[in-house]
Length: 249
Image (cartoon, rainbow, N blue to C red; front, side, top):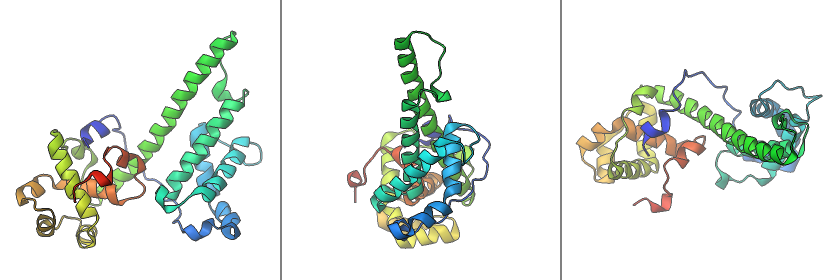
């Protein structure tokens, strides 16, 4: 994972994000569902408003009704193998709204000036594809913002991290394996979270790495461990471009 390639297009001022409510899977059972949906109306509204790029009113805008139904579907389909619930729900809401925009010719997202119907169809399809890409990029940017805030807890500056990514593929793969092994070790994770630094001796014993390498790539290893251990980082994990089964034990 080349962090320089990942982040250089996303430099921006970092704003604080409201923390989503803590998730309890028991809230998804049918008898608790109504209360759970009601408690998460703020999440549903903010996600929908961001996708639609406009202020919405519960009583008037069909997009919010679509999103509530989509949130309910997310509750029905979710299991822990799907990762973070709220990340999963955002994807279900986004896909439901895109389907709604496709079917609703009156949607402002699909209004075009061309008079030829076939041209309108092609332009609309291209515009929708661009819209999907734009939404994915916005969710990814939110994730990077959250990651940047977490890095600050470890006194790691986001911009400095961009310049600390190894350029050699073999080095990146080796460091990813080290980070993966650390992410599965409770003692190392506890030390990292409590003291905000890597326990070099434990890592050397666990991974058979040398101290010089651990110290040189300290910031990069920490960043990888944070990505691997935080279920919020769905998109960042995808940039690792490697399956856990492919990592050496």
